[in-house]
Length: 162
Ligand SMILES: [Zn+2]
Image (cartoon, rainbow, N blue to C red; front, side, top):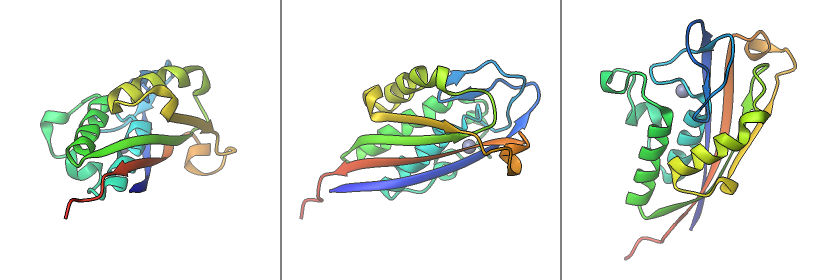
């Protein structure tokens, strides 16, 4: 059985933080605000996989109230999501994503992101899609107040034994 899921996430810009996207630190004037490393792309992908599995979202598995995950690398979150998938007998077939940001440029880092996200999910980098677009200067993304990401995931699930 093939199933799909979607994920969407937004993080606000914040001064004095590293800009982490898809597990890669990108040199930029400001980073993103969040309880973890605020990796908006990894979060959207995590939610897409969780959605395909019919599981609750990332906030359930990694509640902001949990001090033990403060500053956690979101690649760890993806590893946990892959573990949840395996525990349900599911294989992640592919994920695809779009980052919506005015800056910084994502493309020069996309190959490294595919490697890291693929490794965290236990799939080959060619099964990880990473695309980026600006918001044509419109809205909160256009004003560079934050960054958004959306993702889809496709999984295969063995039919439950009767
Ligand atoms: Zn997030």
